[in-house]
Amino acid sequence: MKRYFLLFLLLFAMWATNPTLDNFADYAVEKYREANPETNSGLLGFFTDSFGAEAIKLMTTADDYKIFTIFTVHNGTEKVKIIGAFKKVFFRL
Image (cartoon, rainbow, N blue to C red):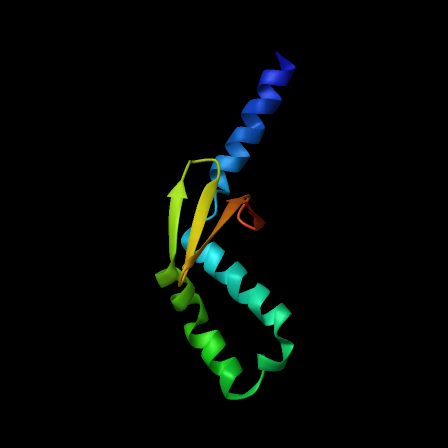
């Protein structure tokens, strides 16, 4: 019985913290900034902060499975699939 309760708590926590497209866009912009530190300042940094998340949202579709979400980023000819859970945990598939 205790195992079922713990499983229920885990599933409830996953459901309550299922990432949205906004969470993913923020994550993607942060990863871009980490990979390209030279673009963090100046005019390019301003555009990254201002339009980066919106550009990511336009290129991304989200398949919501209630306890996790699969994000598909359409990058020209390439599609990248990323699974997200707990609002801040993302893994490339």
